Amino acid sequence: MMRRKMLMPTVILVIFLARDVIGLDEYCYATDVDKLQTLRYGTKTAYVVAKGVMEPKDYQVPNCSPTKMWHMSRHGTRLPTKNNILKMSQLGDVRDEIVANYKVRRSQPTSGGLCLDDLNQLQTWKWNNSITPDHAEDLTFQGYEDLFYMAKNYQRIFPNIYPSTYNEQDFLFRYTNTDRTYDSYVGYINGLFGKGSENYVKDQKPIGNDTLLKPYNYCPLWIEYNKGIDNPKNNTDSESYKFEHSQWMKNMIEEVSERLGFKYTLEAELVNTMYDMCRFEQAWYVSQPSVWCAAFTPEHIKVLEYNEDIKYYYKAGYGNPLNQNQPCHAMKDMLKFLENEQSPKAVAYFTHSVMIQMFVSSLGINKDSSMKANDYPNTNRNWRISKSGPFAANIAAVSYTCPNEVEQKKVIFFLNQKPVELEGCKVGLCDWSVVTKKYGKYQNADCDKLYCSGGSGIIFSYFLMVISILTLLFNRV
Ligand SMILES: *[C@@H]1O[C@H](CO)[C@@H](O)[C@H](O)[C@H]1NC(C)=O
Ligand SMILES: *[C@@H]1O[C@H](CO)[C@@H](O)[C@H](O)[C@H]1NC(C)=O
Ligand SMILES: *[C@@H]1O[C@H](CO)[C@@H](O)[C@H](O)[C@H]1NC(C)=O
Image (cartoon, rainbow, N blue to C red; front, side):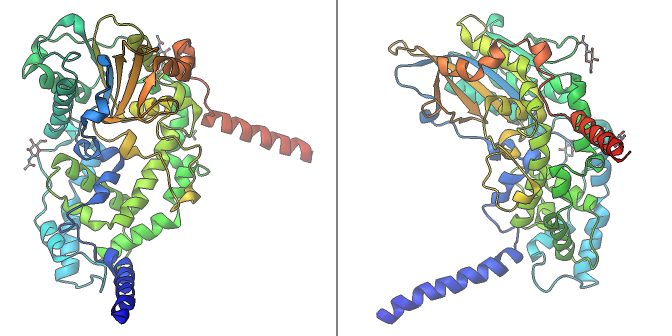
């Protein structure tokens, strides 16, 4: 008996160690029932994977009743950009190369290669030829359903805020100037009032610069700053550049190349196209595994996730104070709406990932005070794009009246249908005074000024650089 007891832990330990080394290497996407990395697909995370389930404990407050809801959503699952569609439509050639690597050249690695299921499914993969550049960034059917069911969910939970018969003065709907946000709005109101409701529901058309839903498009300071992030070549000091060129990324690319049977290292751009194909397909057809995801082990996905998270940390998150000021108009709009009990009972806005991430930063959700390339892999972080910017990412602020309480007005914030824990609130339930104290800065701001100020923009860094060069030159003379 004694001996057996001693032996068991050793056996378990050995199995555990072996799994750690070989388990991950032999990773098989097709047979992985959990596929936990689908929760880490960043801006391309499927909404059905990211969303909460809204249990009664999340939204029922004893002796309080919900009265109004302010809602802002990213559009649902979309098609890729024009540029991405062109690259993805060429992946059939890569598929053929990989299959030849395995079946003809026999250049697959002795361990850590694709499993047979993944290889067989890859062999039958085809690009969908109806996806052409003229449909770039259009909402997909899944994207329509993302918003349709989201609205239905909220209607079921808050029937007094979202009655199923349409009454003009109860609602305000608005979207940005794109097809995919309009189509998301249609999905949403169809979920509330039935198919065809877009024919009679009134919407609000944006006029002039849409600083409410897309402020960053009208802020030259941010546009200039963002050039350094989207074209990191002219900003090699940035943390996103550093991570993109880190050993973690290099190793990932080498390992993926080897896993697919290549005897040379693939271009970073091609690996990125495979990753995007994986994420898009997984979001379009949620219940069907995308074969391109099989190119990556869960560890590779963590590296790729960090690479995107760090980019958006600076582009739309806490990495630049300018980002927190950008949603000034939206913050003010929300506070003004929640403040009184006048109609409408619900407003719903349809916008983009960058806006939702900025709004999440204004609210102070998922905050990290810094994010550096060198932090990886010790990243016990809050900031994750799969939480703040997946497809159909949305923030709902619901006000409650509680007649028996000293402070009768309360608010619960929901991020992707999960109640948000905020400092000073009790399990997600915030007193109105706490809300106005937290966000008073926006309530009283001149948003036309504030929305585009307060950042440590790249312009400022260039300015400093020029000054220091000048100082150096003058000191030498
Ligand atoms: C191909 O794409 C079109 C356009 O997005 C879509 O309607 C169709 O269902 C897709 N077909 C398949 C087989 O996925
Ligand atoms: C609209 O935004 C542009 C910057 O994109 C700016 O130059 C222009 O002055 C803005 N117009 C108004 C009316 O604010
Ligand atoms: C950054 O690079 C892009 C293209 O590579 C270029 O068009 C742009 O002018 C550059 N910006 C600066 C500030 O150097």
